[in-house]
Image 1: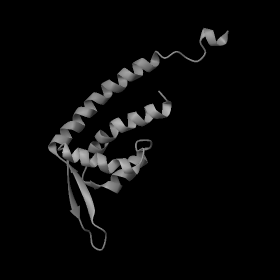
Image 2 (image 1 turned 90 degrees about the vertical axis):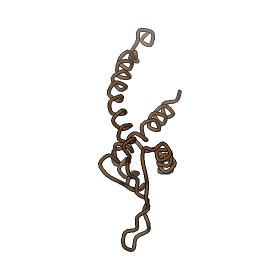
Image 3 (image 1 turned 120 degrees about the horizontal axis):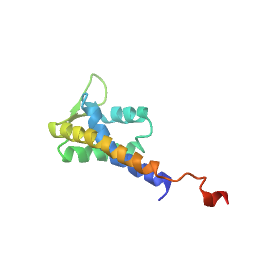
Image 4 (image 1 turned 180 degrees about the vertical axis):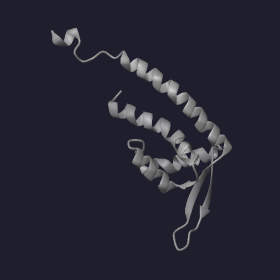
Length: 120
């Protein structure tokens, strides 16, 4: 498996729960979520992936959305977490520690590049 592919798949797997975590502190519109994920660094593979993901989170009952118009600005669609979404974020938070610890344990077993065969 190519390194880039593994990294991309990992990000795709955690972006949904990361959105839920952001929404736990208050409603946000799509571009706001994009910016916040980008600020954290390395979480967002492309802006085009966030809106289909927000739709899936809404279909799953984890978020709701509503359009709001502020003064002379374009309407913005704000996303808000539901109780089911909060529970999902809490479950992810609980599971993430165990998951990362398990992966770290396996990575610690990875042989270094300077094995006996390579030095011969």
